[in-house]
Length: 377
Image 1 (cartoon, helix red, strand yellow):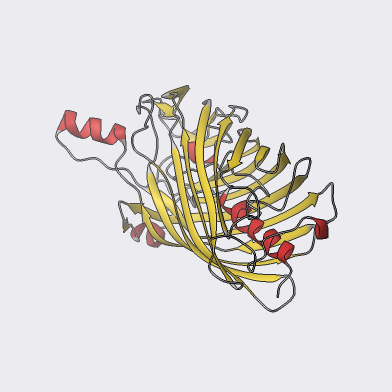
Image 2 (cartoon, helix red, strand yellow):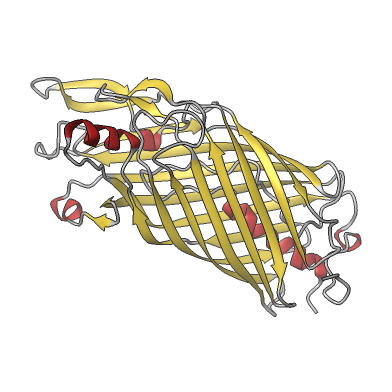
């Protein structure tokens, strides 16, 4: 039988990946908040006083434009598509206040480049340039609680909550070319919302996560997450000056299965995930400029773990990309009687890598994990 604590450690990868989700394109999701690092170690193998430090690195290239679920293939053919290269590095620290109560801190860093023609004199001019942004993102602090005593059952569920601080720059500026009436000026202006390091709002989230063991080889996992951003707009005008940046809600959901292989330390994962930005917020107003939409992806992964160190690689591949009608689009449609719906660029896939190290008060062998012969139903 696979060692119990190895089963516990492997599950960390699944949640570590899902807590740092980023939508693959201009529909910008900036990550989870209180689902962090190693708290999902099957409810869990960490005990009071233990903590873990993890880092998550992600990359995607968004370049396919969608309006609704319809891809505007002419944008690539004509060479007018927007191309975003986005890199994310998150550092997460978890601390167990008891065997069931945990707290965490997530420190995100970002680096983006955005290549376009429409922002630099218009597509008709055909002059492509790049704007960039980088720096600290929005800091996240959270906590969670497992509903059942760790290792007492073949399943467990945790509820969590957290806050998001507006630590990231939400008025980042860079150089734009071919500006002015004669398109002969170079100006410094705010970059697009999709590459702003922060959103400028104080937010809070609720999340749910859990696992269900099916056998010694298979286990189901799930994560649900919603970020509330009560602030309507952040006071920063878009480059066109027609509206302010919205501070939108975000949501994500994951369901998948782990297969524990016979190869020592290796496990496989396959799941599905949904992530998006709604057109209207649940709390507060929804005015301002935003690109709402969602992505449905199939999410394969491979993991390796030792007693303290965990490594993982996931490559979610987009199946459905939908740029929905925004609140602002709906208002203007009602005012003019002419249907309006903006577009957004999405990626084909996301590359996601994780590394986590656990600091335990007891040796791993003393942290008894789930024994499938002893757990209660």
